[in-house]
Amino acid sequence: MKTPIPLRIAACALFVVAGQAHALDPLSYSHYDQVRQTDIQLKLKADFDRKTLDGYAELALQWLDPKATVLDLDTRDLAITKIEALDGKGAWHTAEYKLDAADKEKGSALHIALPKQPRKVRIHYSTAPTAAALQWLTPAQTMSGKRPFMFSQSETIDARSWVPLQDTPAVRFTYSAHIDAPPGLRVVMSAENDPKATGAKGWDFRMPQPVASYMLAIGIGELDVATLGSRTAVYAEPLRIKDAAYELADTEKMVAAAESLYGPYRWGRYDVMIAPPSFPIGGMENPRMTFATPTMIAGDRSLVDLIAHELAHSWSGNLVTNASWKHWWLNEGFTTYVTTRIIEVLYGEDFATMNLQLEQEEALASLADIPAAKQALITRDPDTSNASYTDDGLAYPKGAWFLRTLEQRAGRAVFDPFLRGWFDQHAFQSVTTEQFVDYLRKNLLAQHPNLLTEAELNQWLYGPGIPASAQRAVSPRLAALDATREAWLKGSVSTAKLDTAKWSAAEWMKFLNDVDEKVTRAQLQELDAAFGLGKTRNDEVAFRFYRAAIHAGYDAVRPPLESFLMRVGRQKFVVPLYAALLKNPQHAAWARAVYEKARPHYHPETQKSVDKQMAKK
Image (cartoon, rainbow, N blue to C red; front, side, top):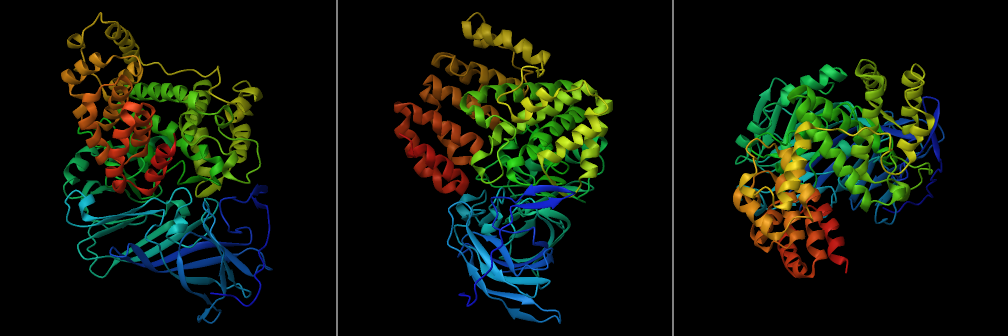
């Protein structure tokens, strides 16, 4: 609505936490140094015909600046019909507001005039069918083909496309929700989920621990539930629930393994929803309810490190959260390190080291495609826009490698209490790299001054690549594989003589990584005929085989590759495969034809990524 009074938009570049000044998140319009949301109540109805969520969001507010008169929120493509404010007597009154023109990335700032600083505001709205966070699937895009499905992906700044709020990881809040959905569909959220709930009177949820906006998540569809342990369960489409329960059977053990290293699990339950194949990423660490790609279901539990990674976020990321996306490595680098430790406790050092070596090798290989300035964990530039942010993908292995270096030099007897102390002392807080460096200096380097030089610390944080002093993981099994690979490439060992019976998924992945762009079409054809790689259930292995096949010109792989691209929407797989196809004129026309058919099945974020590839000449 039009507001008859000018809204005062305060400008404040810094806010103070624990005595330290921090820049406000540049990707949010909110001025959370003046007022903060502390709780959100959602009342929404899912309309699958219109592809919208309709209802209201009620925000409880903590006013920090006694002179503030405006609440600034983040929105994207929301149709707002009314805003109300709660007065001191418990009555709701219409509030004046202004919605700015939309920025392509950040959406529209919502300015609400609130001169009397009410405790709560209620925003009535409807989402757009094209909401960036929500994917609405038709029945034909689900396993049974009978019922529609909807799921969210709010990270990093897409929560604003389905809830008007302060969409920044710097602000934490509790929330509750009442969701109405069509009969026969189950609703799950990143909150307390009751496996026995029926939804007869709608679906009710409560998240008692404070979370950041990107952790808001919702899924609605034909979902069954299988209990895994006393505090763990998996939700999946009925045709997938049995396979999902088998694959995730060790989830309860994973929680216990993580607790043995880093202290109690503080979120109550840990459940997993296996999303439809169009889910764009491997997993999303929504607290209490991880959303995971079905590509991790290989039939042999060989890819459960993905679940270990999302569980690890219950300490690094969900419990201790990056204050802005400039500090992304504090979420993902820490989590990648913790993942390896959980895997080692559960499956042994050999298995963990194989995965770690593969992770490090792929990180080093990725450097060729990342500008040097983007290879740092973080830049020294002011946090004024995401233009200066570093490479998202490299933050995972490089951050983990940095922590592993500290562990190796200090010893686990010293490093493990140090890392647990970081989680304990900053639980349910949003933090910056500067805060971690301060904690590192006071709690590790002060007692062990020779552990890491200042030059090395700067190199890890602000320098390109991986420091030369970094010790690489070496797996004896993968080392033995090197000789086998070289002999096979040279032809001194035939395909029939490859002893693959005991190869793990990690060994197959390394083998295919290392032969890529070196292997001949004939060798790949032999490999496929002998081991059925084009039909493997392990999508991590299949992806690497298809990539090598494209580079080698092994055109016979097209039928299973097309099936893969039609079935799988995970960006990690489909974006590099389309990129490889488009580089070769002989494959480009075929790739475009496949994408035209597959595109409607992909998540908007995946579409956006592949569209960029298709637009390149």
